[in-house]
Image 1: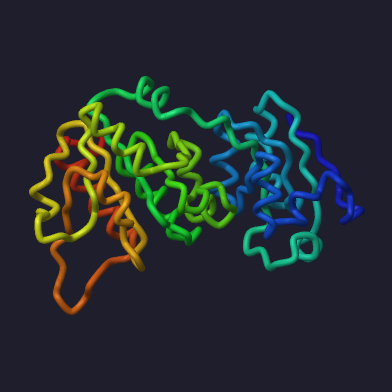
Image 2 (image 1 turned 180 degrees about the horizontal axis):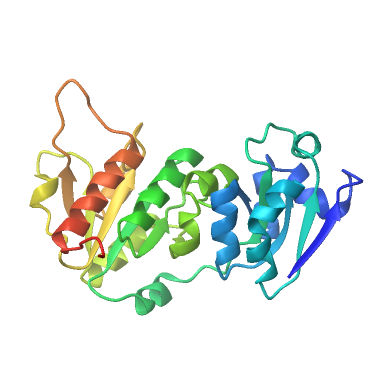
Amino acid sequence: MLRSKVIDDLNAPELAPYRTLRQMEEHRAKGIFVAQGEKVVQTLLKSEFKVISMITSEEWLDRVRPLLEARGEIVDAFIGSKKVLMELTGHSIYQPILAIGRIPRQPTIESMLMSLPRPYLLAALDGLSNAENIGATVRNAAAMGIQGLIIGETSCSPWLRRAVRTSMGGILSLPCVHVEDLSLTLRNLREQGIETVACHPRPDGVQLDDVDFSKDSCIVLGSEGLGISEKVLESCSVFSAIPIRRQIDSLNVANAAAIYFYEAQRQRGYRMPD
């Protein structure tokens, strides 16, 4: 249900989340995230996630009005010109439409696994501190059949505004669990018979196409700067690498993730629906 109001006071309390777009800790404490851009906002409005409010122009409101009016809860839409929205948020906005959503309660590893069909195909992230990298990795994961995402203690949140935007809303369709000790989590997965595949070259490792992804698997990715930490590597059961030319020593983590996810999807026989 839509309830629209013209912005007449930039200091109104209900606009606080938009004035603090760069204060991610404040958003995290409130359990909220920002969806930015038409496609991401549309994905949010089509989802079952709680939508708190949005800011947009009158023209852009018309583009999403049917989605707003179809929702069960009341969504406040604050209307202003592009100039007003830029003044409110403090930075330039290419598409003048943003929305605030409620971060859902995250599942436990156990409850996530119970909800998924087998064979499992999971991904775990270690040391990804760049929001765009984690957002692009999430987008690849959602596109290529990853069933659940495990975020280690040294990685940034996929609910950061830039991460949500870069994922194109992919985080809204992917179960996500933050863990306090990724190494311990991976050891527990191994004890349950889940292969933990490190995307990390080692002399005792194999090439990517030699990994068997037809069984329960968790693909472990690290940052392109430092790779996977030694502590986390110790918890992995397989070490593998993408064969690349010698003049380049690594790929961007999101690109590497896309290659791994595609290979896992290929081995499992996925085909585009007719």
